[in-house]
Image: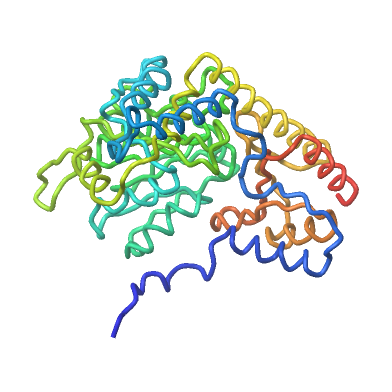
Length: 398
Protein backbone atom coordinates (compact mmCIF):
# COMPACT_ATOMS: atom_id res chain seq x y z
CA UNK A 1 0.00 0.00 0.00
CA UNK A 2 1.42 3.34 -1.05
CA UNK A 3 1.19 5.82 1.82
CA UNK A 4 1.05 9.59 1.67
CA UNK A 5 3.11 12.13 3.51
CA UNK A 6 0.47 12.95 6.12
CA UNK A 7 2.04 16.33 6.79
CA UNK A 8 0.25 17.51 3.64
CA UNK A 9 -3.05 16.94 5.46
CA UNK A 10 -2.02 19.60 7.97
CA UNK A 11 -2.03 22.29 5.29
CA UNK A 12 -5.00 24.48 4.50
CA UNK A 13 -7.24 22.87 1.87
CA UNK A 14 -5.97 25.18 -0.86
CA UNK A 15 -3.13 27.60 -1.47
CA UNK A 16 -4.16 31.24 -0.98
CA UNK A 17 -3.89 32.24 -4.62
CA UNK A 18 -5.69 29.09 -5.77
CA UNK A 19 -8.65 30.06 -3.56
CA UNK A 20 -8.62 33.58 -5.00
CA UNK A 21 -8.61 32.17 -8.53
CA UNK A 22 -11.58 29.92 -7.70
CA UNK A 23 -13.65 32.83 -6.39
CA UNK A 24 -12.78 35.03 -9.36
CA UNK A 25 -13.62 32.24 -11.82
CA UNK A 26 -16.97 31.63 -10.13
CA UNK A 27 -17.82 35.34 -10.39
CA UNK A 28 -16.79 35.42 -14.05
CA UNK A 29 -18.98 32.42 -14.86
CA UNK A 30 -21.97 34.18 -13.34
CA UNK A 31 -21.09 37.53 -14.95
CA UNK A 32 -19.42 36.68 -18.26
CA UNK A 33 -19.79 40.18 -19.73
CA UNK A 34 -18.22 42.02 -16.79
CA UNK A 35 -14.57 43.07 -16.94
CA UNK A 36 -12.52 42.29 -13.85
CA UNK A 37 -9.33 44.20 -12.99
CA UNK A 38 -6.79 42.17 -11.04
CA UNK A 39 -4.68 43.91 -8.40
CA UNK A 40 -4.17 40.78 -6.35
CA UNK A 41 -1.39 38.44 -7.41
CA UNK A 42 1.99 40.06 -7.97
CA UNK A 43 2.44 39.24 -11.66
CA UNK A 44 4.00 41.77 -14.01
CA UNK A 45 2.33 43.25 -17.10
CA UNK A 46 5.11 45.20 -18.83
CA UNK A 47 7.24 43.53 -21.55
CA UNK A 48 10.78 42.32 -21.00
CA UNK A 49 13.50 44.98 -21.30
CA UNK A 50 14.82 45.36 -24.84
CA UNK A 51 18.35 44.56 -23.68
CA UNK A 52 17.14 41.20 -22.35
CA UNK A 53 15.23 40.40 -25.54
CA UNK A 54 18.31 41.10 -27.66
CA UNK A 55 20.41 38.86 -25.41
CA UNK A 56 17.80 36.11 -25.67
CA UNK A 57 17.90 36.21 -29.47
CA UNK A 58 21.68 36.20 -29.53
CA UNK A 59 21.88 33.24 -27.14
CA UNK A 60 19.36 31.21 -29.16
CA UNK A 61 21.41 31.87 -32.30
CA UNK A 62 24.45 30.55 -30.46
CA UNK A 63 22.64 27.33 -29.67
CA UNK A 64 21.95 26.86 -33.38
CA UNK A 65 25.63 26.69 -34.35
CA UNK A 66 28.08 23.86 -33.81
CA UNK A 67 30.86 26.13 -32.61
CA UNK A 68 28.75 27.89 -29.95
CA UNK A 69 26.26 25.18 -28.99
CA UNK A 70 25.78 24.65 -25.23
CA UNK A 71 24.65 21.48 -23.48
CA UNK A 72 24.28 21.11 -19.75
CA UNK A 73 25.53 24.19 -17.97
CA UNK A 74 27.02 24.45 -14.48
CA UNK A 75 24.37 23.79 -11.82
CA UNK A 76 25.49 26.86 -9.89
CA UNK A 77 25.04 29.12 -12.93
CA UNK A 78 27.31 30.46 -15.66
CA UNK A 79 30.26 32.51 -14.35
CA UNK A 80 29.39 35.50 -16.56
CA UNK A 81 26.07 35.96 -14.73
CA UNK A 82 27.34 35.23 -11.24
CA UNK A 83 30.19 37.68 -11.67
CA UNK A 84 27.83 40.40 -12.92
CA UNK A 85 25.58 39.82 -9.92
CA UNK A 86 28.46 39.93 -7.43
CA UNK A 87 29.83 43.17 -8.85
CA UNK A 88 26.58 45.07 -9.37
CA UNK A 89 24.28 43.88 -6.59
CA UNK A 90 26.81 43.51 -3.79
CA UNK A 91 30.28 44.95 -4.36
CA UNK A 92 28.69 48.24 -5.39
CA UNK A 93 27.11 48.41 -1.92
CA UNK A 94 30.16 47.27 0.00
CA UNK A 95 28.62 43.86 0.65
CA UNK A 96 31.17 41.00 0.91
CA UNK A 97 29.73 38.53 -1.64
CA UNK A 98 31.81 36.65 -4.21
CA UNK A 99 30.62 35.09 -7.49
CA UNK A 100 31.40 31.65 -6.07
CA UNK A 101 28.82 32.19 -3.31
CA UNK A 102 25.97 32.80 -5.80
CA UNK A 103 23.64 30.02 -7.00
CA UNK A 104 21.48 30.85 -10.03
CA UNK A 105 18.02 29.26 -10.00
CA UNK A 106 14.61 29.40 -11.66
CA UNK A 107 12.88 31.32 -8.86
CA UNK A 108 13.21 32.57 -5.30
CA UNK A 109 9.91 30.88 -4.45
CA UNK A 110 11.56 27.56 -5.31
CA UNK A 111 14.71 28.34 -3.38
CA UNK A 112 13.01 29.63 -0.22
CA UNK A 113 10.80 26.54 -0.31
CA UNK A 114 13.62 24.09 -0.95
CA UNK A 115 16.23 25.49 1.43
CA UNK A 116 14.54 24.01 4.50
CA UNK A 117 15.48 20.53 3.20
CA UNK A 118 18.97 21.06 4.61
CA UNK A 119 17.82 21.14 8.23
CA UNK A 120 16.69 18.76 10.95
CA UNK A 121 12.99 18.28 11.61
CA UNK A 122 13.29 19.29 15.25
CA UNK A 123 14.51 22.86 14.71
CA UNK A 124 12.49 25.86 15.89
CA UNK A 125 11.26 28.25 13.21
CA UNK A 126 10.51 31.95 13.47
CA UNK A 127 8.33 33.53 10.80
CA UNK A 128 6.55 36.84 10.69
CA UNK A 129 2.75 36.92 10.85
CA UNK A 130 1.43 37.78 8.28
CA UNK A 131 3.87 35.88 6.09
CA UNK A 132 4.43 34.79 2.49
CA UNK A 133 2.74 31.34 2.61
CA UNK A 134 5.62 29.40 1.05
CA UNK A 135 7.88 29.81 4.09
CA UNK A 136 5.48 28.17 6.50
CA UNK A 137 3.78 25.69 4.16
CA UNK A 138 7.01 24.04 3.00
CA UNK A 139 8.07 23.51 6.61
CA UNK A 140 4.70 21.98 7.41
CA UNK A 141 5.17 19.65 4.44
CA UNK A 142 8.48 18.61 6.00
CA UNK A 143 6.81 17.86 9.33
CA UNK A 144 7.81 20.97 11.29
CA UNK A 145 4.56 21.95 12.98
CA UNK A 146 5.31 21.86 16.70
CA UNK A 147 8.08 24.45 17.00
CA UNK A 148 6.97 27.55 15.14
CA UNK A 149 7.32 31.04 16.60
CA UNK A 150 4.92 33.46 14.94
CA UNK A 151 6.23 37.01 15.11
CA UNK A 152 3.35 39.49 14.90
CA UNK A 153 4.00 42.12 12.22
CA UNK A 154 1.41 44.65 13.23
CA UNK A 155 0.70 48.37 13.35
CA UNK A 156 2.29 48.70 16.80
CA UNK A 157 5.75 47.59 15.62
CA UNK A 158 5.55 49.20 12.18
CA UNK A 159 5.08 45.73 10.66
CA UNK A 160 8.74 44.93 11.44
CA UNK A 161 9.04 42.28 14.18
CA UNK A 162 11.86 42.36 16.69
CA UNK A 163 13.82 39.23 17.66
CA UNK A 164 11.86 37.10 20.14
CA UNK A 165 12.92 36.30 23.68
CA UNK A 166 12.72 32.62 22.75
CA UNK A 167 15.49 30.91 20.80
CA UNK A 168 14.76 30.17 17.16
CA UNK A 169 17.08 28.17 14.92
CA UNK A 170 15.80 29.24 11.50
CA UNK A 171 14.38 32.72 10.89
CA UNK A 172 12.59 33.91 7.75
CA UNK A 173 12.79 37.63 7.00
CA UNK A 174 11.42 39.44 3.94
CA UNK A 175 12.11 43.12 3.22
CA UNK A 176 10.61 45.00 1.51
CA UNK A 177 7.95 42.77 2.98
CA UNK A 178 5.42 40.67 1.17
CA UNK A 179 2.57 41.22 1.97
CA UNK A 180 2.78 44.38 4.13
CA UNK A 181 5.15 46.48 2.01
CA UNK A 182 7.09 47.43 5.15
CA UNK A 183 10.84 48.00 5.06
CA UNK A 184 13.48 47.36 7.72
CA UNK A 185 16.10 49.89 8.80
CA UNK A 186 19.76 49.09 9.23
CA UNK A 187 19.36 49.19 13.01
CA UNK A 188 16.46 46.73 12.89
CA UNK A 189 18.43 44.31 10.72
CA UNK A 190 21.44 44.66 13.03
CA UNK A 191 19.24 43.36 15.86
CA UNK A 192 18.49 40.24 13.85
CA UNK A 193 22.12 39.64 12.92
CA UNK A 194 23.11 39.97 16.58
CA UNK A 195 20.31 37.58 17.56
CA UNK A 196 21.48 34.99 15.01
CA UNK A 197 25.06 35.22 16.25
CA UNK A 198 24.05 34.79 19.90
CA UNK A 199 21.92 31.73 19.16
CA UNK A 200 23.89 30.19 16.28
CA UNK A 201 20.71 30.66 14.26
CA UNK A 202 20.33 31.13 10.51
CA UNK A 203 18.56 34.04 8.82
CA UNK A 204 16.87 33.37 5.48
CA UNK A 205 16.53 36.84 4.00
CA UNK A 206 14.14 37.25 1.06
CA UNK A 207 15.08 40.43 -0.84
CA UNK A 208 12.98 39.77 -3.94
CA UNK A 209 11.63 43.35 -3.91
CA UNK A 210 14.82 45.26 -3.14
CA UNK A 211 14.83 46.99 -6.54
CA UNK A 212 11.82 49.04 -5.42
CA UNK A 213 13.68 50.68 -2.54
CA UNK A 214 14.18 54.40 -3.15
CA UNK A 215 15.05 55.56 0.37
CA UNK A 216 18.87 55.67 0.52
CA UNK A 217 18.84 54.86 4.24
CA UNK A 218 17.17 51.47 3.74
CA UNK A 219 19.50 48.48 3.13
CA UNK A 220 18.99 46.51 -0.07
CA UNK A 221 20.86 43.47 1.21
CA UNK A 222 21.30 41.80 4.58
CA UNK A 223 25.04 41.75 3.78
CA UNK A 224 25.16 45.51 4.22
CA UNK A 225 25.04 44.63 7.93
CA UNK A 226 28.51 43.72 9.30
CA UNK A 227 28.70 40.07 10.27
CA UNK A 228 25.64 39.00 8.28
CA UNK A 229 27.85 36.96 5.96
CA UNK A 230 28.33 34.57 8.91
CA UNK A 231 24.66 33.98 9.71
CA UNK A 232 22.49 34.77 6.67
CA UNK A 233 21.44 33.41 3.30
CA UNK A 234 19.86 35.85 0.84
CA UNK A 235 17.34 35.22 -1.94
CA UNK A 236 16.92 37.50 -4.96
CA UNK A 237 14.69 37.32 -8.03
CA UNK A 238 14.56 38.86 -11.51
CA UNK A 239 10.79 38.28 -11.68
CA UNK A 240 9.66 41.73 -10.56
CA UNK A 241 13.00 43.44 -11.20
CA UNK A 242 13.00 42.75 -14.94
CA UNK A 243 9.65 41.15 -15.72
CA UNK A 244 10.98 37.57 -15.55
CA UNK A 245 7.86 36.02 -13.98
CA UNK A 246 7.34 33.94 -17.13
CA UNK A 247 11.04 33.69 -17.97
CA UNK A 248 12.17 32.31 -14.60
CA UNK A 249 15.51 33.34 -13.18
CA UNK A 250 16.67 34.16 -9.66
CA UNK A 251 19.61 33.49 -7.38
CA UNK A 252 20.53 32.60 -3.82
CA UNK A 253 23.62 33.77 -1.95
CA UNK A 254 25.19 31.25 0.43
CA UNK A 255 28.35 32.74 1.97
CA UNK A 256 31.24 30.37 2.63
CA UNK A 257 31.35 31.53 6.28
CA UNK A 258 27.79 30.41 7.14
CA UNK A 259 27.77 27.27 9.24
CA UNK A 260 25.14 24.75 10.30
CA UNK A 261 25.60 22.13 13.01
CA UNK A 262 25.03 18.44 13.64
CA UNK A 263 23.59 16.95 16.85
CA UNK A 264 27.04 17.04 18.48
CA UNK A 265 27.61 20.70 17.70
CA UNK A 266 30.07 20.05 14.88
CA UNK A 267 29.88 22.81 12.28
CA UNK A 268 29.57 22.31 8.52
CA UNK A 269 29.69 24.95 5.77
CA UNK A 270 26.16 25.48 4.53
CA UNK A 271 27.59 26.22 1.06
CA UNK A 272 28.68 22.58 0.76
CA UNK A 273 25.24 21.26 1.71
CA UNK A 274 23.33 23.54 -0.67
CA UNK A 275 25.79 22.82 -3.47
CA UNK A 276 25.27 19.07 -2.90
CA UNK A 277 21.49 19.51 -2.92
CA UNK A 278 21.49 21.58 -6.11
CA UNK A 279 23.92 19.36 -8.01
CA UNK A 280 21.70 16.37 -7.17
CA UNK A 281 18.24 17.85 -7.78
CA UNK A 282 18.76 20.73 -10.22
CA UNK A 283 20.25 20.94 -13.70
CA UNK A 284 20.54 24.70 -13.84
CA UNK A 285 18.81 27.54 -15.65
CA UNK A 286 18.90 27.54 -19.46
CA UNK A 287 21.71 29.37 -21.23
CA UNK A 288 19.45 31.88 -23.08
CA UNK A 289 17.70 32.84 -19.84
CA UNK A 290 21.01 33.44 -18.07
CA UNK A 291 22.28 35.53 -20.97
CA UNK A 292 19.09 37.59 -20.79
CA UNK A 293 19.54 38.01 -17.04
CA UNK A 294 23.14 39.15 -17.50
CA UNK A 295 21.90 41.85 -19.90
CA UNK A 296 20.13 43.46 -16.94
CA UNK A 297 23.56 44.61 -15.75
CA UNK A 298 24.56 46.35 -19.00
CA UNK A 299 24.18 50.15 -19.14
CA UNK A 300 21.11 49.76 -21.37
CA UNK A 301 19.65 47.05 -19.15
CA UNK A 302 20.12 49.03 -15.96
CA UNK A 303 18.20 51.98 -17.40
CA UNK A 304 15.36 49.81 -18.72
CA UNK A 305 15.03 47.88 -15.46
CA UNK A 306 14.97 51.10 -13.45
CA UNK A 307 12.19 52.38 -15.72
CA UNK A 308 10.17 49.21 -15.03
CA UNK A 309 10.36 49.55 -11.24
CA UNK A 310 9.64 53.29 -11.53
CA UNK A 311 6.52 52.48 -13.53
CA UNK A 312 5.15 50.06 -10.94
CA UNK A 313 6.10 52.41 -8.10
CA UNK A 314 4.10 55.09 -9.92
CA UNK A 315 1.11 52.76 -9.79
CA UNK A 316 1.77 52.10 -6.11
CA UNK A 317 1.85 55.83 -5.35
CA UNK A 318 -1.53 56.33 -7.01
CA UNK A 319 -3.04 53.42 -5.08
CA UNK A 320 -1.56 54.57 -1.79
CA UNK A 321 -2.73 58.16 -2.27
CA UNK A 322 -6.26 57.09 -3.25
CA UNK A 323 -6.83 54.90 -0.20
CA UNK A 324 -5.38 57.54 2.11
CA UNK A 325 -7.75 60.13 0.63
CA UNK A 326 -10.70 57.78 1.13
CA UNK A 327 -9.68 57.48 4.78
CA UNK A 328 -7.91 54.14 5.08
CA UNK A 329 -4.76 53.40 7.04
CA UNK A 330 -2.06 52.34 4.59
CA UNK A 331 1.45 50.82 4.73
CA UNK A 332 3.84 50.24 1.83
CA UNK A 333 3.56 51.61 -1.67
CA UNK A 334 6.58 53.91 -1.34
CA UNK A 335 9.57 51.52 -1.29
CA UNK A 336 7.48 48.53 -2.25
CA UNK A 337 5.02 47.51 -5.00
CA UNK A 338 2.54 46.29 -2.37
CA UNK A 339 0.07 48.38 -0.42
CA UNK A 340 -1.25 46.96 2.88
CA UNK A 341 -4.63 48.42 3.73
CA UNK A 342 -6.45 48.25 7.07
CA UNK A 343 -10.09 47.62 6.13
CA UNK A 344 -11.69 47.32 9.57
CA UNK A 345 -13.61 44.35 8.17
CA UNK A 346 -13.15 40.62 7.67
CA UNK A 347 -10.50 40.22 4.97
CA UNK A 348 -12.45 37.78 2.80
CA UNK A 349 -15.64 39.82 3.17
CA UNK A 350 -13.79 42.91 1.91
CA UNK A 351 -12.29 40.83 -0.91
CA UNK A 352 -15.76 39.67 -1.97
CA UNK A 353 -17.14 43.20 -1.67
CA UNK A 354 -14.49 44.64 -4.01
CA UNK A 355 -14.96 41.76 -6.43
CA UNK A 356 -18.74 41.94 -6.58
CA UNK A 357 -19.26 45.69 -6.35
CA UNK A 358 -16.19 47.09 -8.12
CA UNK A 359 -15.02 44.00 -10.03
CA UNK A 360 -11.52 44.52 -8.63
CA UNK A 361 -9.41 41.68 -7.24
CA UNK A 362 -7.23 42.19 -4.15
CA UNK A 363 -5.61 39.68 -1.77
CA UNK A 364 -7.21 39.08 1.65
CA UNK A 365 -4.74 39.64 4.46
CA UNK A 366 -5.94 36.69 6.52
CA UNK A 367 -4.57 34.41 3.81
CA UNK A 368 -1.11 35.43 4.99
CA UNK A 369 -1.73 34.63 8.65
CA UNK A 370 -3.80 35.47 11.71
CA UNK A 371 -2.31 38.95 12.08
CA UNK A 372 -3.35 39.73 8.51
CA UNK A 373 -7.03 39.63 9.43
CA UNK A 374 -8.68 42.98 8.82
CA UNK A 375 -6.27 43.88 6.02
CA UNK A 376 -5.99 43.40 2.27
CA UNK A 377 -2.99 43.61 -0.03
CA UNK A 378 -3.22 45.61 -3.25
CA UNK A 379 -0.59 44.96 -5.93
CA UNK A 380 0.81 47.69 -8.18
CA UNK A 381 1.56 45.21 -10.97
CA UNK A 382 -0.81 46.17 -13.77
CA UNK A 383 -1.19 48.64 -16.62
CA UNK A 384 -1.48 52.26 -15.47
CA UNK A 385 -4.84 52.76 -17.16
CA UNK A 386 -6.26 49.66 -15.47
CA UNK A 387 -4.99 50.79 -12.08
CA UNK A 388 -6.63 54.18 -12.57
CA UNK A 389 -9.90 52.61 -13.68
CA UNK A 390 -9.86 50.21 -10.73
CA UNK A 391 -9.39 53.08 -8.31
CA UNK A 392 -12.26 55.03 -9.89
CA UNK A 393 -14.48 52.01 -9.33
CA UNK A 394 -13.28 51.66 -5.74
CA UNK A 395 -13.92 55.33 -4.99
CA UNK A 396 -17.55 54.90 -6.07
CA UNK A 397 -18.25 52.03 -3.68
CA UNK A 398 -16.16 53.22 -0.72
